[in-house]
Image 1: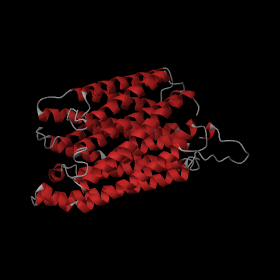
Image 2 (image 1 turned 90 degrees about the vertical axis):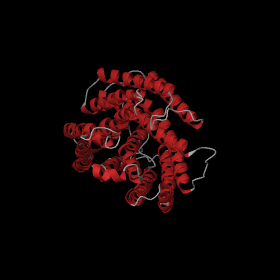
Image 3 (image 1 turned 135 degrees about the horizontal axis):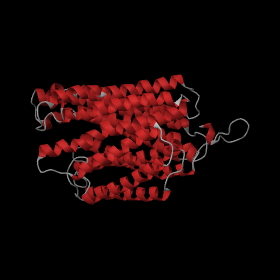
Image 4 (image 1 turned 45 degrees about the vertical axis):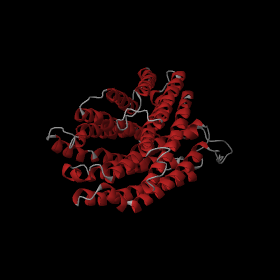
Length: 449
């Protein structure tokens, strides 16, 4: 670790992973309700379980992005973080806001808009925390070296903050509400978050492959150009059936199809840099998560997104388990795996030991990725059956759900495997470090990374 303030990332990683574990717990509870509909019905209704599951995902990913930024920014800007104390304060505010939202949901206190259910005071705290974070990191950048990695990362983070402001705009007209609602939900995950993911991917490849920065930065510019070009107008695939003008159907179909391109470019980018560079970096598990993230994101966000994005297909599949299949694999590949890659790369340096518990970390990777892939397939099959029975044959929704129980049981089993893999990852990263002293008897230094 070259800069002392990179240690600021540690509490962010710890809080993010604690909330990730809690998100998995709520995911297991939700999957159980699909199999046993009366499970916890009186204690905690399904809508509260699902709300908690999805909100925890958003909160811990944002905290994870913050931790990743605090770790890489000193190296990229070649200076210490502007104010470590400010970072700790804004983490505390963000954590209080997230906990407050979670507790509020248990008492039925929420604003009702999917993914944006947070009470008003929670939204205000999140905004304050995010602005403190942006001030801290932007001041670090302004006073230091500007690179493609940290400039694009900050562009993605600032745009995320700008579009978050639409969470405070809640029109009475439902069609108008949904129109602007997607400016947050879609443009975040299929637009500006892709800039964050691509910059983190580029940073890891620069550090672990040894390929010239100029080569990697050229790829990065191409990827973010494709992401913004396709992602912004690709929002149109959410406007098909909400009362928006009919021209959104061809626009949404065309530009949503193009959304596959930045994810395909990320796969080509990651593996090309891997093969061009040195392949003997000591942190093998970090490289595995890095390459895995680009690959799974392509299939989850790209291929599975394309499967039901065309308007004449979406007419039948909209709101079925096909959507859930796409959502699970896309979020896991693009964002969950990328943050885990950065954590796996950063933690040995933060703890000042060699890359450690790598075999356990790799087991976590394969079990979690395999389980998420299996979950995606079961939900895809469930969605296809649901689409045919419900949308084509016209069967009653609840009758169709009875036909999908086998798929839901398999999904629950996959969720248990994800939970096991999550525990392995947490121990591998935060547990006892099994130091291996290299030949010569000296511990590996930060320069070895």
